[in-house]
Amino acid sequence: VQPNNYSTFYDDQRQNWSIMFESEKAAMDFSKQVCIAKCNSSPVLESVLYQDLLLGEGQGVEGGDSLEVAYTGWLFQNNGLGQVFDSNVNKDKLLRLKLGSGKVIKGWEEGMMGMKKGGRRYLIIPPAWAYGAQGVTGRVPPDSTLVFEVEVTRVKLAKECSASDGLTVSSRDSPAPSPVPSSDGFSAD
Image (cartoon, rainbow, N blue to C red):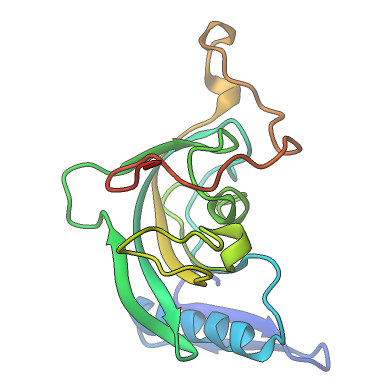
């Protein structure tokens, strides 16, 4: 994804291609379809697939940074987007999280690394990186692959925080906690 509605990519022969789209929406829709095609063409999805939709500005986020995020989550069904199971778009409160704190599913922790303020990204998250075999009762069936469109609206870098507030930066290598987030509408029970 490039500024001014451009996308560049390499094909399987390592040839570089650039496409200019008529609108930002057309560029984003194309990028979403590329991500879905990558998912459908891989025999087994073993890690998070992501595709940038808008790059954003500033420094890329890493473990310990605090973010405010607008998101929509879909079930991945029949090789594409299924029903929406959660969203905070058009709601009063956005989700606040600290990357690496284990408060959201592992797929978010990995898939959001490097995002910038104002950036939008498409994530396709396999069950092992989401809610696994247990799912979320009444919302996410067991062993579901999930799709999220996430937008970072605010960033507070851990480096900018004072040492007294207890934030740590090196939480990337910590063991994965329970994947159940405790944000709006999702509780451990």
